[in-house]
Amino acid sequence: MVKLSDNAQKSLDEYLHQARTYLRSAKSVDAGEVEQNITEHIENELEGAAEPVSADELETVLKKLGSPQQWVPEEELPWWRKFILRLRTGPEDWRLAYLSFGLLVVGFMLSRLSLPLLTLASFVVSRAALSANNYRIEVKAQKWLIYPSLIIVYLVLLCSFLGLPLLGLIPLAYDWEHIIRASYKIGDDTPYWLAACSVFVASIGLWWLIQGVVFLARPNIPKVLFRPFADGFNRRWALVLLCVGFALLVFSLASLYWAYSRYFQPI
Image (cartoon, rainbow, N blue to C red):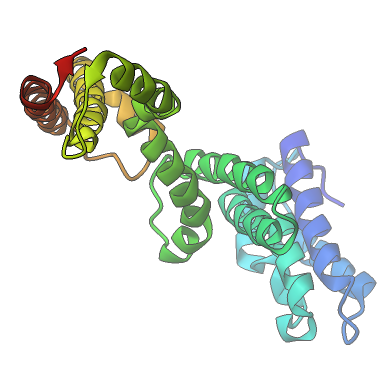
């Protein structure tokens, strides 16, 4: 056997490992014979080469041999075996994509308690897959595997992020109602709902106004949080959010002032 460098030997061991993994489930192919043929072919190709053989030289020979998967007909493998093999032997970005989708499917199949945890785990793996692809998914098939968990978590995060003030206002609404009814004369025709809605909308408007100011100064925040769907976010969108928040704040405060001055009289 020709002498290989350390990196070349690692590449060869990885190639043979992948070949053995595929051949383990093949009934019509002798794994030992195939491995021997691979080794002999590599020796013949590298005969006369300067030793130790570099990883680049070996990689050229392995490319001529083709994928380790070619040594066994894939139709012989059951679907679950194909899935596992892709996780174990496929490229890193594809393994992460399959793992992400698998975690999400298992989460929906199991109990409701495990669904949030597995969805979050799938989300983390999807972000890792994005990182492996330099945050650009060119292959459409990968998007079907990676995007589902991203969309689920991003929608929850977006709704929570935009509606954060309501999380604190809604529990206080019941107490506010009692305080207002105890402090003001309120008739049956008093549009109390208008005052309550105005308070909620004013809080949302103020929160969006603050977000718009922050995103004007740091437009990369949404891009990092919501990759790759917010890659087109810029200061123009931050300005739109700021203007909408300001408009909601002014309109709701005007509605609140009108309602209190017209219908609410101190006791």
